[in-house]
Image 1 (cartoon, rainbow, N blue to C red):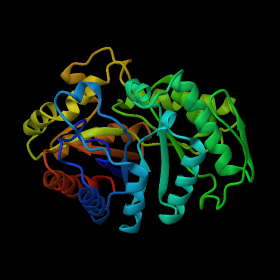
Image 2 (image 1 turned 90 degrees about the vertical axis):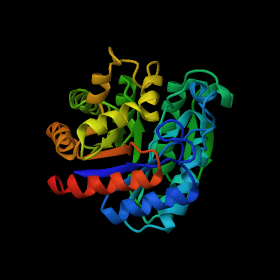
Image 3 (image 1 turned 180 degrees about the vertical axis):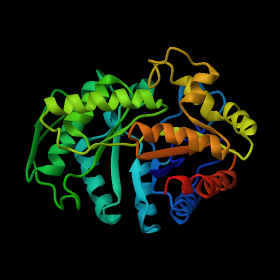
Image 4 (image 1 turned 120 degrees about the vertical axis):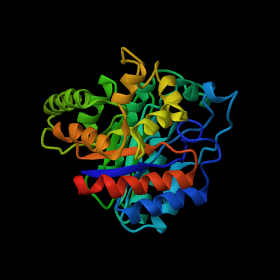
Length: 332
C-alpha cells in the first residue's frame, strides 16, 4: 500500500484554516512527508474564492505547477501529483509543456492529474462557457496527442492546434495522465485516455463498481492492456482517542467543504448525514483507521492519499507522524 499527503496549494479555507498555506509550509510538509516515508504529495488548483467562503475567509491559493517546480528541487524520492488541475480553464498545449518540464525537472516523479473542477462558478468567473465535460474530454485527448506524437494536431469544437512539435518528450512513455472525479463520465474518460483515477470520498464498494466500469470501457476502447492506478483522496482525522478524532473531523473546514459538494463531486450521495461522511473518510484512532484501510485494500486499492485534519501546520506534521508510526507498519 502506498500513502500520500494532500498539500494546501489551494486547500486553504476549504480543508484548512486561512493562514495555513505559504511557500515555506508547502516545502516543510513535503520534506516531512518524504522523511517519514510517504510515497506521494498532491496539490490542487483554484483561481478564485468559492462563493460559500467569500463572507468568512480570504484563502491563499498557490499555483500548483510552479509550487511543484520548487518542491522537485528540494526532494529526491516522493512523487509529486496534481490532484487535480482544473482542465477546462487550462490551455492544453501550455499545460503539456509545463508537465513535460516538471517530468524532467523532477527526474520522472511528476503525475499530471486533471479534472472538471468541483465548482462551475469558478469556470464562469474565468469566462468559460459551454460544457465543461466536453472541454475536458477534448483537453485530455489533446494532451495524449501532445505527449505521444512526434507532431501533434487537434481540431475539436473547443480546442484547436496544428503541427505542434513538442520536445523534449516526457521521460516516461506513456506519460501518466490521471483523471479526477466521481461521475460515470469520468470513468469512460480514464479508460479511453488516462493512466489513473483520482476519486474523492468514496467507499470501497463505490470504488469496486467504478473499477469494473473502467475495465469495461477500456475493453471497448481497446486499451484493456493498460494499467490504470486508482488513488482515492479522503480526509483523515487521526488521534490516539477515537472520540476526539471524530470531534475534530466535524469541527473542521473539511467537513463543511464536503457539505458544499452536494451539487458537484458528491451529487450522487443520497445522504449527507454525519455517519455517511464518516464512512467516506478515515476517522478514528490508529486501530480504527487500520481497519478502514484494510477494507479498501480488499477491493484492490493500493494507493491512498489524505488531507489530514489539523488547525495548524505543526498539528498536521504531528498527525502525519502519528499515522506513519502507528499505521505504516501494518501495510509497508
